[in-house]
Image (cartoon, rainbow, N blue to C red):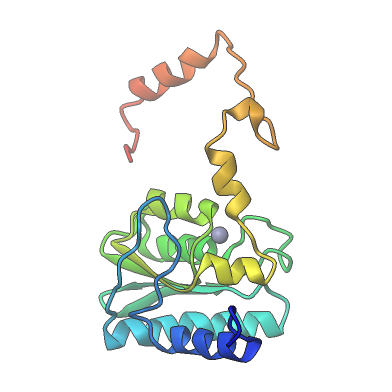
Amino acid sequence: MPLFPTAEQLAIIRLALIQDPINKLPSKGGAPMTAFKPSLQDLAFLDRALALAKSSAQNDGGPFGALVVQDGHVLAESNNRVTAHHDPTAHAEVEAIRAACRSLGHHQLHGCTLYSSCEPCPMCLGAIYWARPERVLFASTRQEAAAAGFDDAMIYEELDLPGEQRGIPCHWVNRPQQSGVWEAWQLNRNRHSY
Ligand SMILES: [Zn+2]
C-alpha cells in the first residue's frame, strides 16, 4: 500500500470533489469557508458562468466567466477580455459588474448575486465590495486557477506588506494641495456619497 495516492486515485478524489459541491470547500479567504447549499437556480446560473468561461477558453479570452443576476433576471454577463481588449482589469467579474451597473443606471448592485466561474481575485473582490451585491457564488477555487497558471496568492501576500516593501513599491508623498481635494469634496453639495 503506497503512502501517497496514485495519480489515478487523485483523479477519482478530484472528480468526487467536483461532483459534490457541499464537500468542495474552497480556500479560506481570511476565515474558514463553510459549506453552502445552492438552489437549483443558483446552479443554473453558475453553470452559465462556467459555459461562458469554457467558451472564452476556447476562443480569445481567459478561462473565466461571470454574470450578475437580480430577482432571477440576468442583468449582465461577460467572459474574461484581458487580452482581447488589452485591458488588465477586464476580468469577467469586473466586466459583468460594469455592464450590470450601466444596465441599472446605478453604481451599486443592491439585491444582486454575482455568479463567477472561479473564486474572485483580489482586484475583483475589491470591485465586488465597491459594487455591494448581496452575495457571490463561485465554482472553481483559487487553487484550481493557480494550477492553470492564474496564481493570485502573491497579491494576497503583498497586501500584508508595508507599501514600500512590496514587489511594486507604493510610496507615500505628502503634498500641501492634498487637503484641498477633501475640502472640495466636503463642500460639493451635489456629491453622491457611496
Ligand atoms: Zn479578477
